[in-house]
Image 1 (cartoon, rainbow, N blue to C red):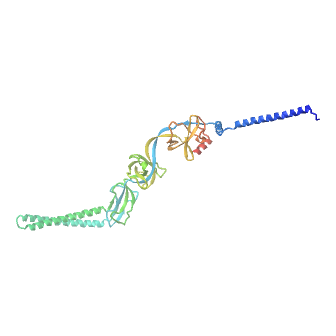
Image 2 (cartoon, helix red, strand yellow):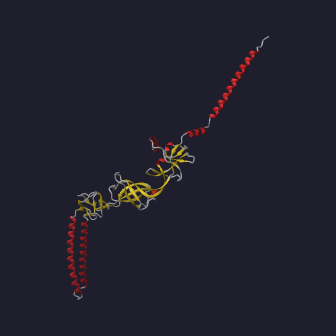
Image 3 (cartoon, rainbow, N blue to C red):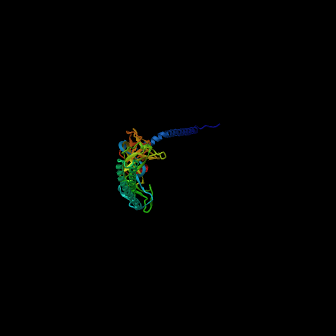
Length: 397
């Protein structure tokens, strides 16, 4: 028979109780740890909210767009041309040019002799015509005296009616020859005056083809004259912009020489037709006499269309990103919303916003620091530090 030791049994039970207590404590600790870790795990939305709550709010200046009256204009290109370019030619044929008195660029007056054509043969023909006139005049005088004497004898019956009619016819023939001789004189005198090529008006010689020794031909161009030295700008304008213009509007033409100021002119005429090939219409702008532009130049200019209201903001309030323009709208909860906008005209440091309400509150500057949904504080503008200058310059580019 085996003996049972009560002390030994009691010792075993004590050990077993300790082990069970340790296991129970370990389970409790593990359960508490699991609970704690599950509470720490949050959803992505809560994590983002928590992160945003911890992000410091940027202090910015809040503004509203200003309604200002700005001048409205648009740009066009076109040629500088003569208001009227007069073609001066020869009215004689077969005569040599003996003298040329002017050159390209010379200013001339109405009636000034530009060139001279050989007149010797015409003077000789004029002298012959005058001699023929004198002869015809003498023949007429003799025929008139004879006719008067015959007419007196006709009443006495000394001569027949047929004889009287013959003398009357002789007088009429002599008169006709005298008239023909007078016409020949006038013709040669006219040709003599045409040996001098005369300026028909005041202006500047723009082209010259006349040379000494060459034969003049009827209708041949010898000179071109810019009448009154008056130029005009023929602006090429689209059919849409053409309806914005009216006679008398001011235009400013830019000189190719940057050291010269713009030339101001006024719209004289708007072409009634559109070129079907280019889809442009011509606008004729009178410009004053100036050396800033010259005939034949292709220049740029602007038309003044008057003032028009514009909703404007500082350029610092506009963020350029990915080729688009954005502003940051301040909401009631002091969070910002990034909104794409359309820009219009620019003047100095302000820009027109086409599609924005007038009572919208915007971030005035420092938009390069903001993102959609950021929390801001209303206050003064961002301090002018080298870092802010670099960031603003980067976002403007």
